Amino acid sequence: MKKRVFQGKYPIYEFELAKGESRFNSVYEIVAHLKQRVEECPDATFIATFDHGPHTAAMAPEAGHGEVLAASHLIFCFGFTLTTPEVMAVRPRSIAVTELADRYVINFLEAPIPRANATMIEWVGEIASSRQTHLNDLLEEALEETFPASDAIELTPPGPGR
Image (cartoon, rainbow, N blue to C red; front, side, top):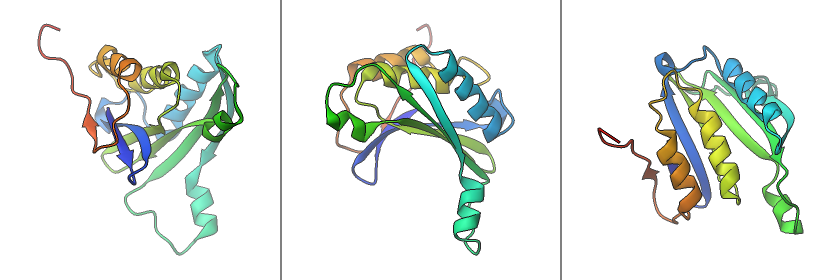
């Protein structure tokens, strides 16, 4: 899992997983798993899924998809608080799932509430076929660290015996 700034201003979390390391066989299976997790969460409400393939093909049939084989969004909202109008600018939440030839890329925009980030990190970590995603370290990072305005930070796994 990486925590980085996209285009110099958007703080995102990004998880890349080789296809052979995934519990799932497609973008749609991954999105279905994430949807189930949203529906099980008392603090979240499922809104929709959005499949980018048909949308992009309809908007620009002559344009290719580059290395992207499939791409879909899970759209939902956490309902912790609604204290100011500004919070509406960063809602609802979305987790993007993209399939490339050899891997899946799952990413989402950092939420203003650390608990929301920790929950999304946990859900995304479940996609891996093993628990070698080191969720405890990732959750600790999400809950304790403020996001730097610098380059990507690699969230590295713990050493042996940890």
